[in-house]
Image 1: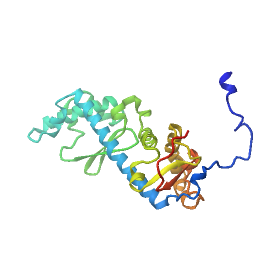
Image 2: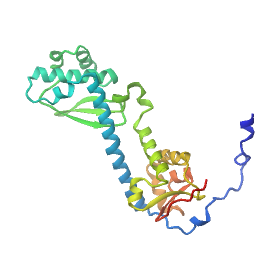
Image 3: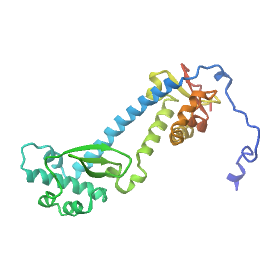
Image 4: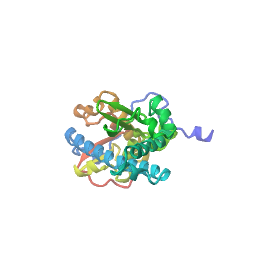
Length: 258
């Protein structure tokens, strides 16, 4: 009951609630849509490179832990077709243990037996294999003259992949960057931009989290949530309005108020 009584009266009834904008923010130059777009694109590229590399390393390390000879056998050039196929079977076996639905039914049975001769019926040694990342579960499929291995987070996290999704990594990435750098992601730093709260106070963890999560709302509106920063008076996108923030240019280090 004590916690319940601490809920402020604000928000219980409809009121005239004007925006509480810090006086020293008035007149500050806002970031243009173009600068924001380029900075965000740089952040996305950096996110993809670093998180993708980290995910790849951790996945490869976990496979190496299961079988230290696996990758050396996959890379070996002077091997017989049977030895090469055995290495492929072993890789698919470990992958299928984490992603039970990644193979079709017939290939699944052959891989489960770890029999390279049984795989020969479903695997063409002359075809190349292309590897990519995606948000869907891991899947191996035959497309034209090649095999496509689409890797999802379930290959590393197995049953916990519903928690450790690419979306969760995305929100966590931007939340941490925004909080630790006080509103400057790498892309915004290069373009001399900063995310600030309208009331002039320091960004809290919740502000950074809600703004990062708000990207999904801006995306879900067929990207109109991002484009809103073109015509909005304070150039706020939907995720800015969710967090109560704006993006400004050449703004100095925020004051240590709370």
